[in-house]
Length: 538
Image (cartoon, rainbow, N blue to C red; front, side):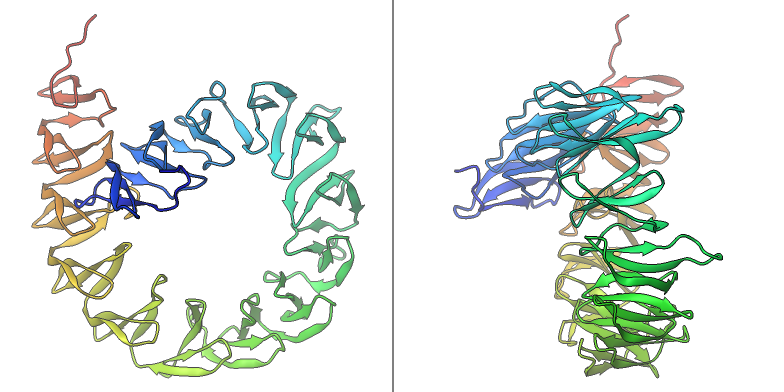
């Protein structure tokens, strides 16, 4: 099977604990259920997790990097990946699993495609992946830009302040050390500050222009908000383009919710009211609203008197009249990038983005439930259920609570008990639990803690108990074992629910892969993964 075979998917075992790989064309399991998590494949590789550590596999299931590292610093890109060890040190690997250089401490930049890294401790520099020094380790700081630059700083004449210069990835100086500030690139422009003045450089490092503004925001969609220096205690705002032209004059009030252009409309303020201007600087929506949001999909939410909300279109027409109570921003909200739902006179009104009311809903509460199937959570008379994207009942309105816990599983409350149902409302697991809670990384790992009769257990995505509900406490898995407590005694259980180390100890520390420290009857010693005492030699 070719390495770039796209027909490989990660699959969880029937117990919902470990993951493997299946080749979809042949239905062959090419990697047994080995890892506790398999991330999405990128560039033919996937990060895997086992016993709280991370590694790397390819699409054949071959383990390229053993799961022995604390966290991936980056994903695989251009054949390279970086993993963090503990807190700080980083190792860089190629696609064969070969470590390219000794541990890097204080990494500040990593460009895998260009094979460059910046790092240091007190003094910073730049290396290539052959360990050649590109910039000597003499700088107060150094960091990389994806556009192919390294910004590095040296102390000024006072020794207290830093001045930045710009270098290419071969170590050639592009700009001298004269900048008090160098920002990253946005829309092909980076903000710099020299001699107290803000300016702009392009992606070649060319200084384009300097301004007299008191501040420049980062560019967004080729435009940046600018702020005048205070005059009589007042600051004015406007907008410039990438060439420094003032497309919106800096004459508007500096207000909390002044926004850059979104869909060609920018929110400006005048006389404590908001309106919108277009890219020619023309006022399109008059200054009459007390608050606004940016335009998305051709419409924007507006407030009148802070109490009422509605929606306008790009012409400034009020397509939904601002007579819905704001209810602390919670009312008249967008749902699933398709609908706007607002409560008025105890009825939920549903609008499309043209402002047309398409239906009304007579429930006590309506909210978003699942973004994947665009469903809604509704409740009435203390019971809840879901509606599909056409506002038809999907899960019957008969539950006390509904919570998505796994991608296709829902924890449902009924008669003060918790069970598991699927997206269609089919019961997967009986209503026998008193409570359910996330376990280790939320619900992402397909496991959940449950309680019944005052005891705690662990279930998988099928609702099956993989650790029986007989413990007072279940801790997180570390190196394949979880600390469990029963009757104030501690032991270890594995992901299959087997009590590997009996619950007889007064105190226990997490298993580190080789041993664990335990205390029994006042004596502290080490045990191995089978519970056998380790005899220490002196």
